[in-house]
Image (cartoon, rainbow over all chains, first blue to last red; front, side, top):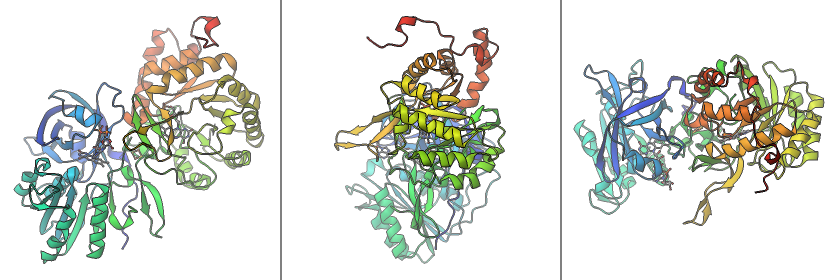
Length: 290
Length: 295
Ligand SMILES: Cc1cc2nc3c(=O)[nH]c(=O)nc-3n(C[C@H](O)[C@H](O)[C@H](O)COP(=O)(O)OP(=O)(O)OC[C@H]3O[C@@H](n4cnc5c(N)ncnc54)[C@H](O)[C@@H]3O)c2cc1C
Ligand SMILES: Cc1cc2nc3c(=O)[nH]c(=O)nc-3n(C[C@H](O)[C@H](O)[C@H](O)COP(=O)(O)O)c2cc1C
Ligand code: FES
């Protein structure tokens, strides 16, 4: 079954502007959560969508960086007001981002990309590697009926059960596990060094979850490419629908530079380079040529 | 105007930018046949700039005419179609095909893309350049802009050749050939090894070329290269450009083009200029030093 949902979602509802850092706190090793007020984006953003973020007032780094929505922050009246982003410091921009204090300005544009489409699901199995867990908190909250997203708010069918399979290098990198557990997501962990949970790959966790479940499972996956490829293969073997959120190097995030392409199959099975920022980042795993 | 390859097909930007305010839009360069483009990674950031090796990823001219042009034609701004071919005949056929089609205001000949083999010779060899422009002129009555590459020894020779061939204006410049290396893995970073450098890092090169070519030809010049602010625009105008295109800055500040338009009247007023034409090429300087770079 090839589900064509990768028609372009252009930045028609995106907002660009300067926002101010409200909080920037460490949540795990090399991992931070940054919060800023931006009702324009908060009101419209959907789980799996991302924003582009750029340090203000400098040309080094020059280009924006894509970062996924972690969670929308409500104001006192419960209306979407701010955004939480969780990021790992890996290079030039994210290392400097970690040094920012409240009141520092940031340039952002978004929301961008297509996000996860709302799909009826009995048991949602979320598979995350490294910092790839970030798109899943908002998705879990939506599927558990705790939060609506979008303007007007979209209705997503509730899932009976959600499991997060989450793997990292070692326990000190695990970020936000409590955020998931608190809302009733079953969390299964793996680490490369065995410091927490299963010692080995996060993909080892998928089969047991699916086999123990009496519900119809569906998989969503985000993380390093080899891990997504392995997850896609397992999903195929188990005959489960699987969506992956690709992480390609992006420059503009809005479809105008053609740098973020991935090989995506069309209905006839041929591949073509597709822009992951406007036609993704979420794709049906079976459409992706890894 | 917004530069080819840096504004998609304008649809992508319609939600963010009031495109009708722009002087013109140059959609991504089109070729005769669809091209998948180069293998990723296609871009890498460098200090104050970026390298790209997109490789003219496009769906070909027929798809462009069917699917993009009707939309572009309705945007209320001039659509200047950028074309590239590997051979003289490919260029002239593309130009002939676009002749008389609704919504095309002018053609820009991309004889300068560093990311495809073929095509570039037209931008580095004056005789070939002149003949190409003349041949395009012959089959097509649209205004023709020739977009030149900075990767030549004598830019003025190419500029004069394009003018002699009948170009109505020159677009200066396309990207500067460069590369990025991952020394730990002893590998080039870009999938295509070499790429084109753009962004603020190349502005001094583009300004120099506009300045030099302004002395060498009579046709109007379109300045391109690293433009991101109103100050950049004014520098190009004073150095000899009659118009500018914004490229890479669209990527990191999507509304840059209209921000600059907002700031233009104040900047012109600062020079007591009533319009852009009043400042074009008004730079003063040491005439003897102009054409040389002996030091
Ligand atoms: C749609 C999308 C959503 C994303 N969401 C998030 C998110 O929520 N949180 C988050 O932390 N990141 C996220 N990323 C990844 C993030 O964009 C990059 O980590 C960021 O661009 C790195 O910028 P930098 O300047 O710090 O690193 P750079 O200086 O650009 O890169 C430094 C080095 O790190 C390597 N590198 C780059 N990205 C990664 C990576 N992801 N993992 C490991 N090494 C890397 C590069 O190859 C390079 O060698 C997302 C990416 C995409 C495409
Ligand atoms: C990603 C990218 C794609 C480009 N594609 C094209 C193209 O298709 N045709 C073209 O004539 N120029 C292309 N260019 C060159 C730009 O139009 C412009 O000449 C150059 O980038 C210098 O201007 P800038 O520094 O403002 O970007 C491209 C540039 C970039 C960065
Ligand atoms: S990041 Fe520019 S087209 Fe996708």
